[in-house]
Image 1 (cartoon, rainbow, N blue to C red):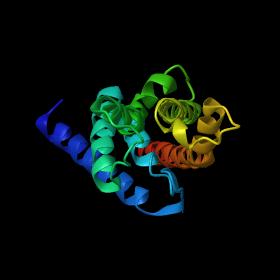
Image 2: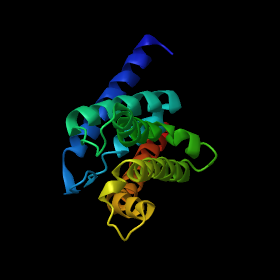
Image 3: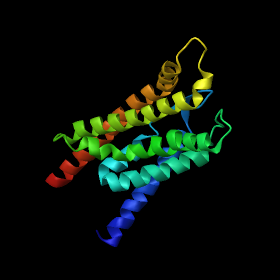
Length: 190
């Protein structure tokens, strides 16, 4: 890889982190205890991972997780120890966003790139949802109603924003991927 192409990829990654951050700041719905439905804020990160591979995807997603923490602010967890606070940072930000960079791993088995992009996007956004569920069970469960199991509360609360986010992100990434594939095909025949 030449220095020029490496610089171009790094620039694309930085732009996608910035775009993701801007989209995160424009929520359709913002929940009281954290979480929001956005205009596909995960799509730029997933798209860059699909476009440039796992290495660039994980790096971009990790940087994106740090930007999300800085811009979104970390909700004060209902705990008093540093360990639990660190667990919130890892589960709700670092791991939850960094897994988005793994989209190519789930997309690779599919010969049809469009299907692979859809499956890869769905898989990594589902992994992010699972991170929030685990965090909800371990840390945020104190907010669960007394008559409801903590795991069910966490699935429901996090699902109220993550399920729409997953759907929006899959649709946007597939449309973007289709556009890029059509453009590449058009350029090949030109």
